[in-house]
Image (cartoon, rainbow, N blue to C red; front, side, top):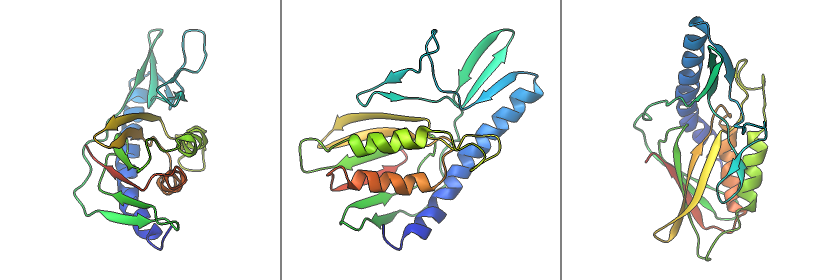
Length: 194
């Protein structure tokens, strides 16, 4: 990555804080209402097996699993629209460019542009599986520090589209995402709010 890393971190940390704040507020509300709450649960089927979905066969997390009266509901918490701000372009050492606009931490739209028919999605898949793992207590005392979902790819007018829920992962996960996409063979990417 380029010397823009500190600028990228300064840009995306407030977006993360909005999402984390929304999850922690919902967690506190549910606890005050005497619910049992499990933060950031992995989605599992009735047999307890982790559910995998999409073209990349990835697991998912919810924001909160709330149990009341013997019923458990997995909730997704929305952080609201991002603040208005400027975009920036992060340049990877091999020339790969990532344009970052204000986005929702819990529903970022990622567009990947490539000359070839399809980039190699394996670096992206590895990035996701690495950041899906819990970093409990390294990032926030009540949350796991993990990404929640990656939906896609979907072919859209000469590009590939994804939706990313960065969950409670730290800002560094976006920098790692850019590095993973640079290894995919794509030319450039954009992250924004749809």
